[in-house]
Length: 483
Ligand SMILES: [Fe+2]
Ligand SMILES: [Fe+2]
Image (cartoon, rainbow, N blue to C red):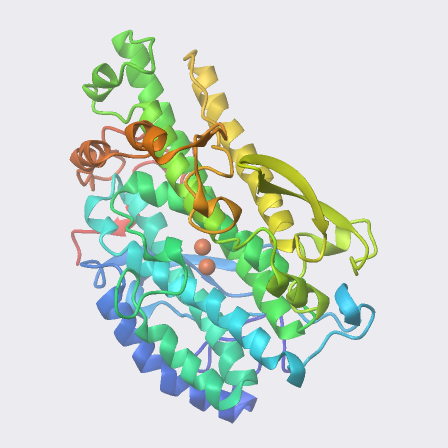
């Protein structure tokens, strides 16, 4: 049996895809492996490669109990190829091929399209590791440091997942693309990563948590829609990646919630009621809530850009061809062909923002973005519960989708967080009230002092409610002293 629930650790590359019987692909991956390790050593977590980190490794793809926890030095992490189990009866569930059997090989006419989608997804994985590589040094606790490294090694594994598809199904150009994924660099003007948000800096831990909340959630939405693909190996790969992605968003959501909790506690202890008294709150060594709002504004808007143009003929053909579906496609009640349906898209009309009915096929990006915004809102409401519980009169809100955009309908205008269209002259003096300013960045940076004592946390963040793998509060998640 080539494909099993268990993972084969007998080959150099752990897998559940029968690599031992697939010499061509095994060889290609073995050739790629040293370049990957090279990349990891030069672009991965800086300064922590020799430390023992309490990491989970996937040992099975069963929904329960797939992870094994143990101390691992990151360069020795068992990156591997894991696909969700094949469902014999699976079909193409949407588009012009709806009802056909799902494809086990790449259809010739969709080869370029599929390759492009896989490369774009693949490119984001190492990019985020590069963006986060200096954060270990300012980790607010061993718990947080471990979570950062867990996210990093899993993004590394997601790169492996995409490279496997390229090597197995796309021949020579797949091998070239696999090399290219190790050559581009986040933020490098000469060979940047492919998407904007993945070339931004992640300078501090608040940015890291916002990134894992907002940008990894874009990743989730993309993976969800690729998990619907008629190309079955892509679908199965993405389905397993989603189980790992959930932890990344957990890290982001709880990270921000703990920062909020700590700020509220400090305010209560000091008797500060006005959340907008920024100077007073900052004197307590915590991050004021208005600054968190600005950070959320920034990361939300950067992440919205990842969805592309609201109206897109590319997205329409991805859908029509059956290669990329909608979020939870099979649970949507419609014809899944969309040739006559419409979808409401927010657009610029006569200088204002209105909803316009567009053909649903070309509005696929908009729909995915709407699902994303709804998902983000649930998390923001959970943050607001923390503020409320502490009796502080302040609410976090997602800005309007037209705010601070670089791609799509609203790239050509300025808009306030409430969606009011502004002239350049109106925007300039107010933008520092809505986006993190240089001074905000410096203040946050001043709080980023490492806190590596077991069970201790930096001034600006509360302890988590429970430990990873149910470990006690003073658990040594990273063995700093035994390096
Ligand atoms: Fe990922
Ligand atoms: Fe992720």
